[in-house]
Length: 291
Image 1 (cartoon, rainbow, N blue to C red):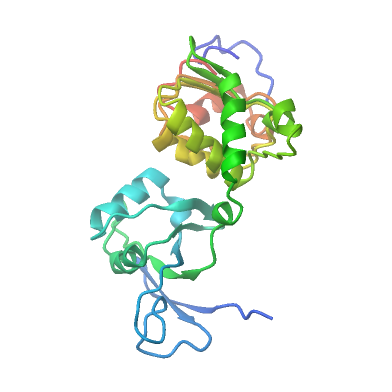
Image 2 (cartoon, rainbow, N blue to C red; image 1 turned 180 degrees about the vertical axis):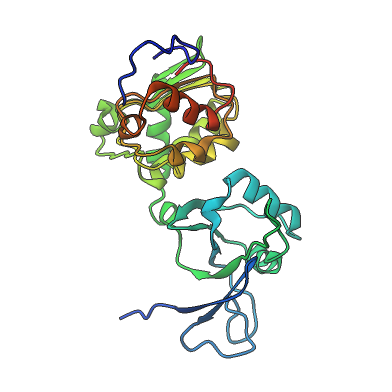
């Protein structure tokens, strides 16, 4: 751990179901048209209607091509501002060059489809949005049971320092209380991270410091919800994890961090010198005081 404004002379140690088929047609530089074929869907009927024309309460996947280019908070706020109904995104994540999330409300799914091409980015390019029926997202399929949630809450309560408003979740998987009850809480899994953030939101709303050291985190998609659920966090310890690039850090850049721990992650070894390292991290967290 070191001050961001340290002496530049100090040495830095770097640290059999048939799939949908898709055809992509390029019409203009600022628009992409994607045609999708789905098996045995009668023409003229919405994908989320049954044969009687009634709306099915089910899950829908929302896909934004090239969504990786956009910050989650900006993207969600922009879409919501153009959407005629409120929606709750579930399991937001980036996959290849796309941004994806799920909604359970058929009305929201239809409204989201109508938002396509209504949002423009900074280069005035129209953003496409595609919506289709989906299986339950991973975090819902593998949602913790009520008794598991209660035990996880008890475990987290033991790890919370009220005086410092700090929560220590390092090596959470190996907590004796969880292991003794055959609970395998792996924070790199979306369902486990979602459960953890839900408990934080409900029980530690004033959280200032979160320690996630040594949890084998290699992606931060699941952690990105912390921006809404624990917006007051100023200190974040991600050391001794498996983060490979600052791209992962950008997923939580909505936090107003003042202190960040990253040593022991592969990304720390990707910079030529200390100055480049500090500059890249501060691009994500401009208010950072210690790194």
